[in-house]
Length: 358
Ligand SMILES: Cc1ncc(COP(=O)(O)O)c(C=O)c1O
Image (cartoon, rainbow, N blue to C red):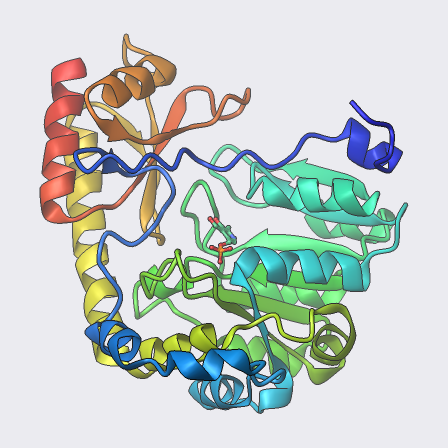
């Protein structure tokens, strides 16, 4: 091993992505992708895409895409930064707002990339254990203040539990956190319509809030790598104008993202189908004796503590039978596995295999 890398990089662990097996008969319910393809308009555009224009750089400001997204949210393009997947948005927040040695705060458990990004930046990570019911601990804001957190991450709805926080709760946190509050809304599309809040309102009322949205989950475009940040222009400008790569969004991504977002009928139809399957799957899992956390996402956290068989064994046996779910080998999650809501057919097969195992 060379000694060329920075000491913090040498000593840190990298992010471990979920398995990406591609055998056609595998039922892949482990990385929260949409089980449905993107809108047909994506396919039509790909068929007619002017490949000859690829000799030219893309629009560095992604202006058409930003204008469309801004209009969707009732904001201006100055409030929007386009990123190469949500992961790039998170990385840009880290490199734009946190100096090495400064503190970032997050929930425990949460999306494990946050601590990896803090490690790369040589920032301090403070992770606060969530309560038994996955709510935030009462001292969350106090700890943010005491640690002078420059960046606080909250996933809403939460991964991996599926818990949902209201706009009121988020606003109260934003009012008191000393630094930037990044609300990671990767799974927001799947929230029940009557619960959804207006992200733009939070952003308009709090100049320290940055929200992240991705097309990976709700628009079935995980393979494309396209997401965006929404925030006060004072937060968005340094990202767009300084820390993001000048051409971080390819010509193809800008055009495909636009047609996917324009087809809201298709997107809403997919979200509804997922919500229906989420309820059905939760119900069936409860009948099998599992503790099922109420979820506002496209996945369900399933706890097996009251069963004779443990979660790791379930994960292994499902895997052997061709169904992939996600197991997290941590003390808090060792009795649980996370399953992505699939199509009705995929869910049926998963339930059948699971019930045979139990
Ligand atoms: C909580 C959360 N945030 C952000 C992301 C990033 O998604 P992407 O980079 O595909 O947009 C993920 C991906 O799984 C996630 O689970």
